[in-house]
Length: 186
Image (cartoon, rainbow, N blue to C red; front, side, top):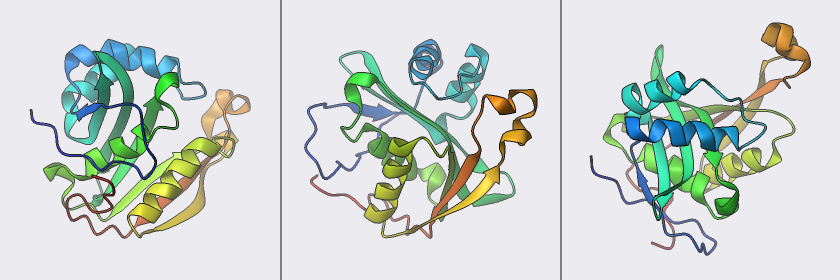
C-alpha cells in the first residue's frame, strides 16, 4: 500500500514522518497511543484491530523511526458518502504541536477513497481546545467554513454522562477536494 504525499504545516516541524494506511500489526500500538492521549475515549483492542483492517482507507498513522506518532480514525457516513466523519485523532506527547494531526487529516483526504468527500465532520468536547484549534486551522487551510453545533449532551451518554462532556459537532466544508489542496511549504 503506497503512501501519499502529505502537505506540510505552515510552521517548521522537527519530525519527519511517514503517513500511511494502518495495518493489523499497528493495532496494539494504536491502542497504547490512544490510551496515552487523555481525555480521548479508549476503545477495546478489538475495535482498533477492526479500524486497522476494515477501515484502513479512512484511517491513517504517522510514524518515525519505527515509533507511532499519530493515528486518525474516520469513516464515510453510510447515509452520505460525501461526508468523512473523523472519530479520533491521537498524537503522541513528543509530536504534539508539530502539525502531525493536520498532516493526518490531509493524508485521508488525499486518498482515492475520499475523492468524493465534500465535508468533514467530527465531534469535540468544549474543554478540548487543542483539537478545536487544529480543526479550525485545517478549515482555514482548505478555505472552508467550520460550523459548530451541539450533537450529544451529557445525558446522551447514559450512566457515564457524569464523566463525559457534551460533544459539539464541527462541520468543515464545502471542501474542494482536489488532491493536495491546502498544501504549503512542500
